[in-house]
Image 1: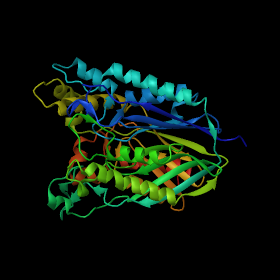
Image 2: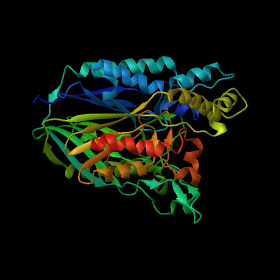
Image 3: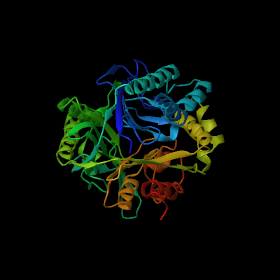
Image 4: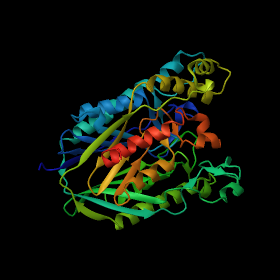
Length: 433
């Protein structure tokens, strides 16, 4: 049996002053509170390498996602479908859709969403960091699994009324005390930590938790926000352990019950995530591993069929300079998605024996995470969302009839639910039941 090795890489991906944030929908960069990073682990020893990478960006859509994945594959001598790139999803951060930006540039009085030259520099620099990391690999023999409850962070954004429709939407910063007083709703309260060890020496810790990671945003101050800051605080505990944070299925999850947007709440939320990380580390149990598997299932998520999501209406919206920037740029992203949807998106799973990690596209609802864990109740199942963000939100099927914010901007239709679950089951259990 071949020896297992890993390499870790880190790259600064902070945008320059003046760069658009969150797709150009909010104030551009005017300062940096804390830098943004791309952090990755390369696993070697079982055929072609596997790459897991987390970006402190709002999103990577369509061609932007594919460009990063292609560059990392080439840099690490593997194939593209053995590379999983996920975004953490803070909003005071870049939102990248290369084709969307090209469409915006051609429109009258365009408002940019992405500096294409800056993006290409990021692609090159992240690939260079991964390539250089291969010169310094470490053997690993065990994986560690640990989890802990995170208190007073996550809450469900969608509060239903007696009629079964959305009555309140609890955003990341919810100022109305009546809405904050509503119950947490459906969440996954557990933060999971998956770690790699060489005997009794820890090498890397990968953390997974489901919430939108924003305390406040829109002020032009770049930040990885409270989840990224918790990761960095954890790194300061022991710099020898490489720390990565992945956002789970948080499409309908925010900190809104526990956050009114006051700036002093950011360190409070940071410390609650940090406490979850440290508690999960204390609960960690090691398991010897001699091999791992990587499974991939391509999916085609169907675009919305409503007229307002079609090509003609989207072009009309994009080309109308009187409309708000958010509507126009979103129309460009919709046009990019209509082209992208013809090409499959990969759902992938890293199977380590005692633990599995499933990587999903878009902004999936938390129900996908909970369902995924139920498919292997006796295993340690981590779920990372925010991969290829071409489809945007991925609600569960019934949510389209319940109303609320997410279905109004989701770019794929309700049939995506069954398609995505079929792919998850295929990669998680190895075959369709």
